[in-house]
Length: 80
Image 1 (cartoon, rainbow, N blue to C red):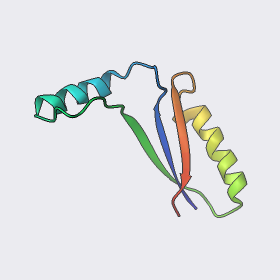
Image 2: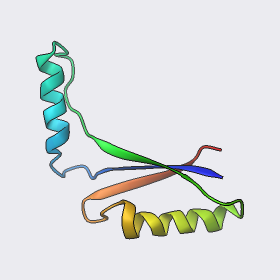
Image 3: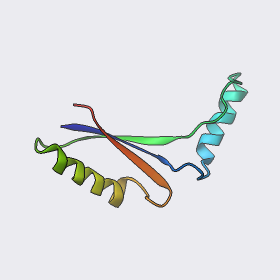
């Protein structure tokens, strides 16, 4: 089983890297870019087993290491 975990800053949290990317895109002529929020993606392959148990373990991994729950949110999706 393979999962994709997407971690991004919560809305309302300042994203200086996203702001820098937005400004750079606009300076390259992409004036239509109104905002950019950056994040990170993890592809994690889990040993075969029950999806509910694997999801619980992934949720635990996110809370303990992959995301900072104070300022970040995460989404888990199964990709194969």
